[in-house]
Length: 146
Image (tube, rainbow, N blue to C red; front, side):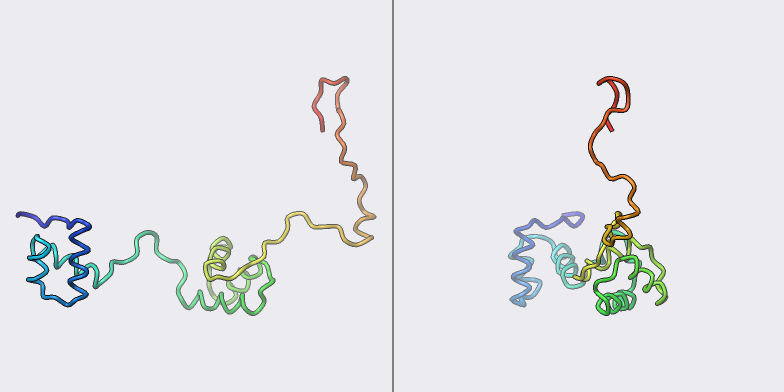
């Protein structure tokens, strides 16, 4: 047969069911109809899983637990505050990583508003001009509207 051929989906399913029934490899080979190496490679892949593909995790499980402890202590803080506390704990990651890790744990973090609201009377008294109507800058109707 030459080199080991890849098993089809049907052959993989048959091998899997025979493996669950704890049939010996000789029986599996005769039922599937392929080489012993192909069957053993398929079984070994299932038994010892391959490593995860893609980029490696930057944070360890210990660092993740420390972040989870910080978030559970005060759940209404912002992501930036959590990042500051996490760096004080000894983990040096970016703020974006911190923000991605928190929802990954099933928790929530608050993102502060860019525009702060004017709530108190002294803050409102400092506003000079708040008319939001459109008006024309140039002469006539030809200029841009602001």
